[in-house]
Image 1 (cartoon, rainbow, N blue to C red):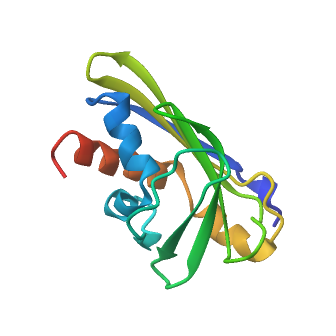
Image 2 (cartoon, rainbow, N blue to C red):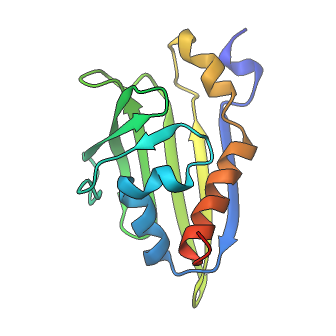
Amino acid sequence: MTPHDVPTVVRVEREIAADPATIFEQIADPAGQPAWDGNDNLADAAAGQRVHAVGAVFSTTLTMGAVRENHVVEFEEGRRIAWTPAEPGGRPPGHLWRWELEPLGPGLTRVAHTYDWTHLTDETRFERARATTADTLRASLDGLAAVVEGEG
């Protein structure tokens, strides 16, 4: 089965009752991400890794114990961030996580979350990539909303 037998770009969005700066702070600071990761993939991320620019690299520990270095490839403070994970010291194998924020008015933001594995070439990763669905992305958005809206 090739990666193209299923969609290789999964995107979901929802409105969150918080301003973009508050939401973006949660996304750009990896230390908080495990608390609202709907993919049940993140176990830990050390404090002090807040992202400020393209080219930054932050580390996370996965639930299975592996460490990933996440290479920031898109960044606009308060609006957009995207990264490509890789094994420590390795090249990213071709999948990308993206967050985009659009202010809708005072205290309201549309947040889009995308997982794109179009360029993934490592077939050993296809099964895990296929398991990342709109439901898992939506769970992350819902968890993020719960945190920033004061419910988490």
